[in-house]
Image 1 (tube, rainbow, N blue to C red):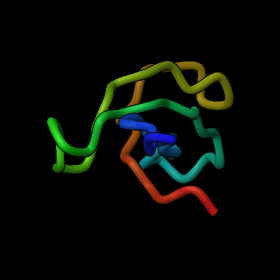
Image 2: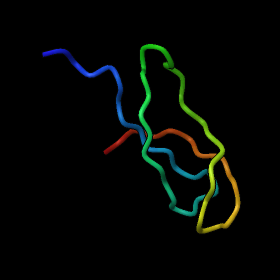
Image 3: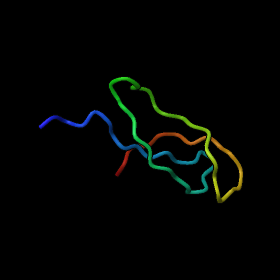
Image 4: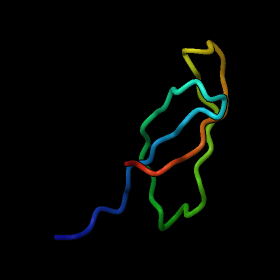
Length: 55
């Protein structure tokens, strides 16, 4: 059976609110860390979310 090409990554808020999202990415096509601007419900504004490893 083939290994899946997509892996799950955790996007954590850079503002330190503790909010995170789960996303999938293909590490062979995008080896760099993923950074997205998403909504942080605890701060009630859009902030940067940076990729971290899943535990």
